[in-house]
Amino acid sequence: MMPHPLVVQLRFTRDEFVRGLQGLTDEEARRRFQAMNSISWMIGHLAWQEQRYWLFRAQGQVPLPDLNERVAYGKPATTPPLEEMWTAWRAVTKAGDPWLDTLTTEKMQTSLADGLANVGTFLRRTTYHYWYHLGEALAIRQMLGHRDLPDFVGDIDSQAPYRPE
Image 1 (cartoon, rainbow, N blue to C red):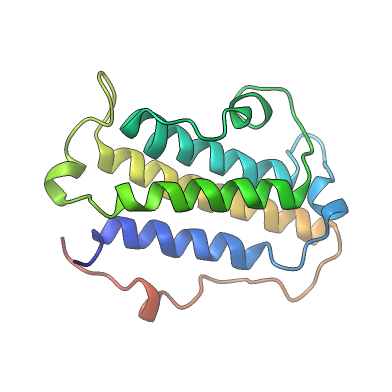
Image 2 (spheres, one colour):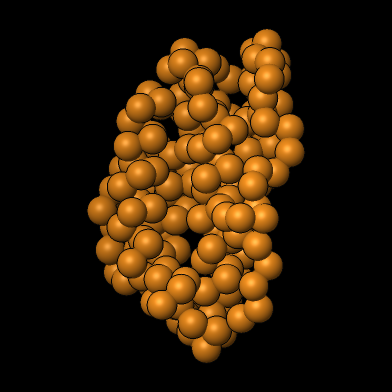
């Protein structure tokens, strides 16, 4: 069974996030330009969000509880090691994918957890959150002097074209 179209869009967005951050060194990823967070924080922060939604709220799991202290919204700014944040991000997205693969249009309309918005809204929020931080990260990369960065959305035509539900 093919994943729900919104899940396909999230995965495309994740791939674009990775593409936009290729070639960073640990030192570059940990650099802060006030009042922006470091790129390594952004990677961990998006892992935190996906863990919070797809693992904790949807399934009651918290495989990486330290993300709640280090990169959660509202916590003090940090500059964590780049590879550590990529490792966390890969672990969380891999752990959440089987649940995301179960989503149907009907399930998208159900509450993610008691008293919360529906799953579809949280899926869109996550996708848009990636684009927000990707733009911010690319701006930081420009300030670092990086050239030849991605400047347009990648191959959406073959990877995630419009598909009706």
